[in-house]
Image 1: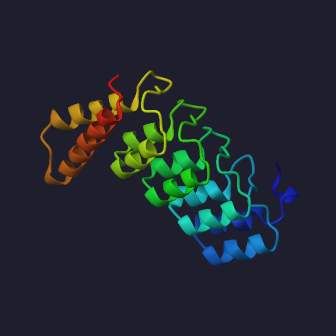
Image 2: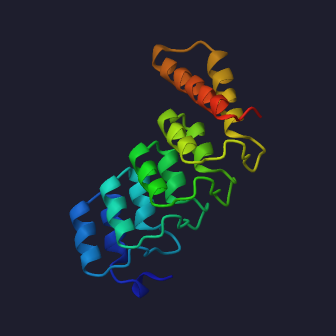
Length: 186
């Protein structure tokens, strides 16, 4: 899709990137398509999820933005991007609006749960599990989220940690515990 076929596309995407709620509100009121995107830039909802801007994500969803729209390069959804970046409130909103917690990206075959575990976002892991994320799904390399968490714990436990690194180990252990409690024992 070309930008000239979608009036207001650049402005909407830039407003979402800047987390400019007023500009997004005005552009949507002018009739700019909430699903507008091009071959290079993901949707405004993707950018709102990436930046953790719940208010913009809500505006876009209310205007008809597709909750599971994929970006073209890796096939990420707004949920996988929000989970990867640790944005709990955005993840909760997207799940409440029907996002598929088990959607896989098209590149590494990872789910939002893989992304949250890989980036040690324990609060996001908890929310995803509460909303039906399947902890037994493996990625394109055969790794389950529990395997990822266990590798984090092993890696962090086997070296001398600086004081600033201790919270990473604590989060890895918390994630491993959550996944085991959830029933993923693979």
